[in-house]
Amino acid sequence: MSASDDRNAEPLKFAYWVPNVSGGLVISDIEQRTSWDIGYNRKLAQIAEAAGFEYGLTQIRFTAGYGAENQHESVAFSHALLAATEKLKIIAALLPGPWNPTLAAKQIATINNLTEGRIAINLVSGWFSGEFRAIGEPWLDHDERYRRSEEFIRSLRGIWTEDSFTFAGDFYRYRNYSLKPKPIDPQPEIFQGGSSRAARDMAARVSDWYFTNGNTPENVAKQVEDVQAKAAALGRRVKIGVNAFAVARDTEAEARAVVDEIVAKANPEAVNAFGHEVKNAGKASPEGEGNWAKSTFEDLVQYNDGFKSNLIGTPRQIAERILDLKHAGVDLVLLGFLHFQEEVEFFGREVIPLVRDLEAKTEAKTGRQPARAAA
Image 1 (cartoon, one colour):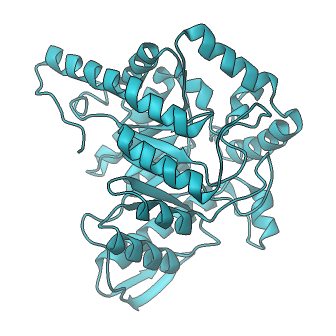
Image 2 (cartoon, one colour; image 1 turned 180 degrees about the horizontal axis):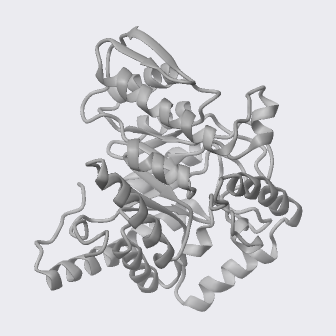
């Protein structure tokens, strides 16, 4: 039985990258009809909600670079998008160092109460050493960053669930701390990324969701099996999200031509500088297998290896490839686009219904009752 057999009856979830950082989702001079401002993003959130997306993920950056000159802060921006929508959940990226669990627990608990539980977090352990140096934060060794993140998550959960929280870690300490009001149940979901041994082991122990960079179904399945085996030994199950950059066109040739143009118009200096930074972060893991450790120039043009997931082609081809990812154990696809508003709307109209149809056919073959997507 594969890692996903017991979950195939659940409808796959869709999330989109919130472009609250300028420059879009590719390091390229190709035209991108996408804006980082709040007006564009409010409308985009409403489009995504109507299109069948369940989550949006705000990005966290503190300094300019790699084609991104402006960055809105993730938590405040997330709250603004929640105020403009009714059902969409927003995942706010948090970075240990600039945030500590006390501040994060208070912020997220408040937004949770104000939005009836529609806020989640993505804990980013850190990949940009220059950013940490620029803001006067220490840059820890690779596995130490994940040890700190694990203490951060354990602290958050304790603060959110215990009336008198006491914790003695290497990075955070609490004594009889009580936060009120606490988040309403269910507790805010905690997402976390990474491909290294430390990232996968941390996800198995403490995270609700594990995000991996874009990859083939075969390589994703290897990560899923590893994470789920470790989680099962602890009596847990982790949900899996994968990054992808979607280019849906009438023909596969048209879609491939768009990707070719993105890469042809890439900014080599910015891509190589980004590659140097993230490859150092990925290779810093003891086994040298972190995110981006094996990424090519073309992969790095899209920040999180989104081209590797191969959601490039006609709506039917993309839907079939999404099902392959689901069968590899994926629960959620996190999507980037070139022109966000129009392409999110198109994806919701042309691709998601095909995914639901293929899911229903798969369930019919296995004898399961058809699953229903969230209303």
